[in-house]
Image 1 (cartoon, helix red, strand yellow):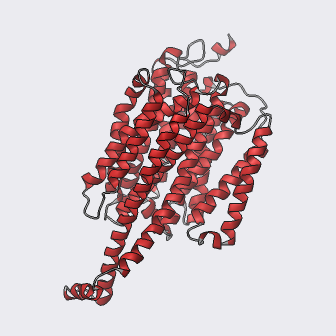
Image 2 (cartoon, rainbow, N blue to C red):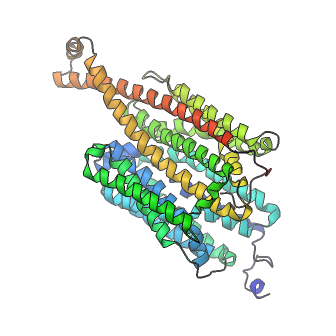
Image 3 (spheres, one colour):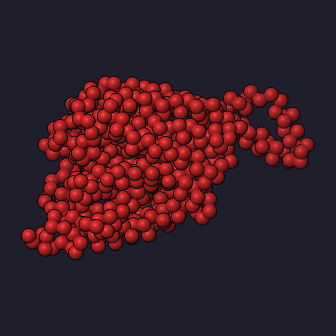
Length: 516
């Protein structure tokens, strides 16, 4: 066959790699997936460093996290068209190059506007990489080795968010925040070279595929307007600002037009017809509520530890990394458990367990030790292992086989967008609650003049004594706001756990093909 003749040395007749070249190709694809997922969390503990370096507030600094997630989510519906139009390998190579270039430009940014622009570029280029790594792994590995390839892919997806806070904290404390972006460049170069050398024979056929540009444009408009409203609302005093009102109107109208267009379009960018399946709708609602709340807490905790508890970024990252220990250890056992136990019960118990971990956090105080901070993170990992795999099986198991790809893309889009929106809402709520608590505590202080006098007697100037007292009030107000936030989060987790019972029991015993 001509195709076989054109295959590189070391490939079999079907064009699949063999031996060491296959292992190396699998490693390159897994590494590519790792850096994309890593960038969703690597900036979390670095927000104070970035904010300080660029001279912006901490709430504005969180835009660095949300902008990446929003751009990544928006690009997901475009991935299928890109693969049909340019081929999987070419699309993968172009996305890698764009991701690496935008990473370098993020590090070179000298203002928040520049950083957000290139962070958006990172998200747009990184969006196709996660599903494409999975697609290419399935393409190059023979059927009997595909479960092992998917296990490798899943492991990078689980471990990257764990490694993100540790790597980000270490880099920010010992070098500078710019290097959390620069480190992507050599890794991208290695991955790109590996793809050129090993995966040219795995290219997919190309066609002049049609894309729903109107639907995609409406998606960008309403999601972008919504995120700008959420990110800027607090600083602009919400709906007293004409700009925020305009963003809200654009988001609402854009969303309605998007729904109408996509439901009537012959080849929609986002196939909303899958919502007719009750199992898919229930699982998506559960995923959105759970992941949005979970990801918001992952961003808030490092900020609180660094702003109020005196933690370095490295120490905050180490505490956050405890999330992953039980998640990694228990994840391989969950598919076996699903063969014996109703997956809905596993999801319910997992999400409820995450809620229990949130309740433990409501006991945090300014005297909490590192172990007290890390323990609920460790607890939460077990719940995460019981959540991600079963919820995907329930959702994708509810749709028709030919709808699996559309449903998987929609779940990935919704999950990523929920994380970005959750961060914006939680950050605003936490900051506002902290300010309100500060005012209440300041008004209820007993004999503040005596306290400042005592501090002055220890050698502090009047201004320094007042600043020291104010810092103590700030610390107490933030820990109270943090406790309150996690009480609300625990309630949301319980409610979202209950939503899964709206889904019928899945008929398929294992993960459906094409699951992302």
